[in-house]
Length: 107
Image (tube, rainbow, N blue to C red; front, side):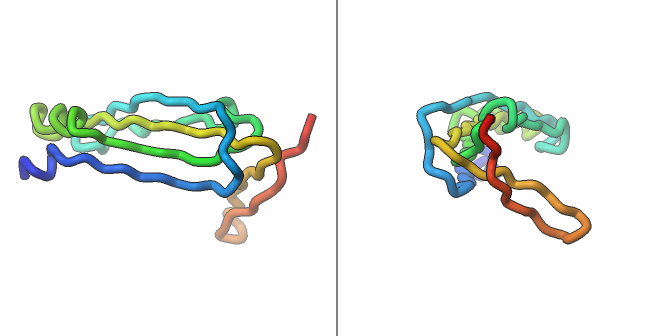
């Protein structure tokens, strides 16, 4: 159990467009073994040109925090890399049970 709580993990989601130089990083705190609260990142506000990748990480320090609090507090770091140039927005379409990729319109 202690080994699981002290472990680290990384989760990367590649969206497709090439990465630009703009990045945004924030920490998210979760309580009760990650059950509450839900953490949302406003990708449209952070990257109006689109998102290249999303990277989520829990390092050993975060794992130690979870271990000391017996899992009641969990911290992860989220890094969003914005796309360079033209990008695509992913728009959910519940009626079709899928997601559509549409180009971002230039202003």
